Image (cartoon, rainbow, N blue to C red; front, side, top):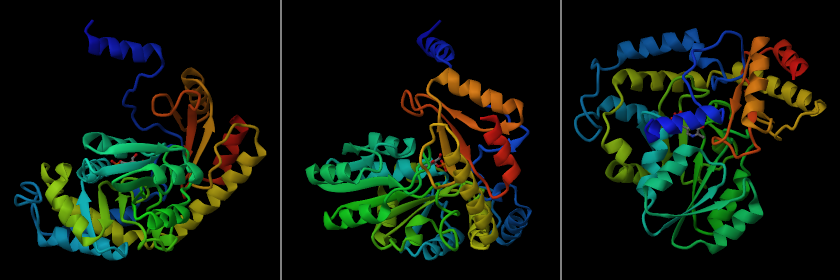
Length: 366
Ligand SMILES: Cc1ncc(COP(=O)(O)O)c(C=O)c1O
């Protein structure tokens, strides 16, 4: 057995082995399709329409810098920038690629990143690829954040998520933005789990709070509530120019196809119309929060569509997920190393299309 096979074997023994499951039948408390847009017939038709109108080219033929650019791509990015009240937008093939490219390009020797300890792996990997210093602060802890901000040197960049992907809780964005402003630091907000869900038009939490002029850059990912895939970095005009020059995941990769740009354009036209879906989701979240407050479990305090029940131990959390599956409830066990030891949990993702009966059944089974 070679070392790689041994690593696999170790994972198996520790109940950590990852496999690729096929989508299960039953109640959906696990996907990121918060508004049901991945399954939406009307979005599907809008994408088909937009594809028919888009310039005909099956693939981009190269990187955006080598023939893969087009007036169509630039027009879609202009629309995204306007939607998010930013000067510019740059599209990537995924949120992971956006974070990797953006963050690593900014990670020069003179930079210090101050990161919430729970930021997503894609942001962490971006920091790792660069030459910057990194300081972590306790999750959502403004006192610790202020302390770390005072100690940091050079060009300081703060990395947070508006809605945290594992805990589902919300960053105190206003306070963080004020402190960054006072300290002349740049604030980057990953809006992966807020885009589509927060704001009258689903613009995300930053705009919903009117903070767009205080935030340096936002990462809007398209694979969660928007129901498709891809991402855009929105921010000042010079940041787009900078990424075109220094973001390696963008420079050294084939550009998205026109089909992809078309699906993004159609999604942006569609998402502002999803007010009823956003309201249904909000009602389900309120109902769920009320039920969890009446229950005994060790719940993480979250007011968003991500709700987590702590079940310490990899085996224990898998057993509970299996037990739920037997009655048709699908929810993901989140194990070490995705979360810290003792913080293993079942993560329940709520959707506009969940019913009160489904939520009642879940709490009956827990
Ligand atoms: C907070 C956060 N940022 C970025 C990403 C990566 O986005 P994508 O799935 O589009 O690669 C994710 C995905 O899980 C995420 O949760």
